[in-house]
Length: 175
Ligand SMILES: [Zn+2]
Image (cartoon, rainbow, N blue to C red; front, side, top):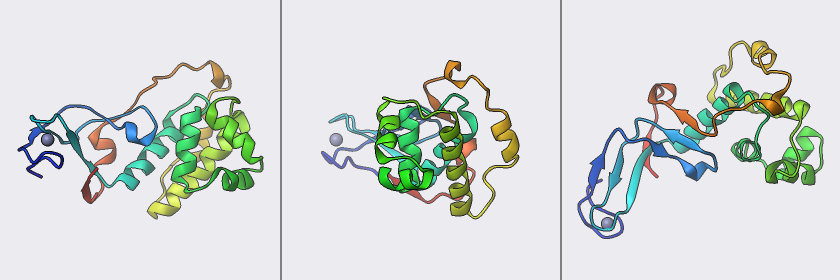
């Protein structure tokens, strides 16, 4: 990529700048992404490896590393990456569609049991999609979730270093 899509000027490459991947609806920061900026119109671009795989890595990271109860944004992210409508997830989990909406708009906490159920479903899905075991030590994953999870303070930001997610053969595409 050498010229700006918007104005046709030559663009410059920016390396080693964290990239805010807000497109996914979460506060995700990616390191090791090549970015481009147009000196003329200030348009910016990022070369993001295979976005659907990246989504899977973010989802897995949420399920494995985020110890507090799933936030509304995280619930929504996981549901969307499962390619399920609220109504469909409701049937799978055994709640009503309006319960799902309340989890996603923050009017109601997902609660301990449904948090663990959604994580389990997602991890099974990610394993199935990648044809490899995504989570080793699944019992420990749940064992290590603390009991009083509403009180847990965790970073708002999810940051992914290149080694965490670029070690696979991604097909590069421009987002
Ligand atoms: Zn431009």
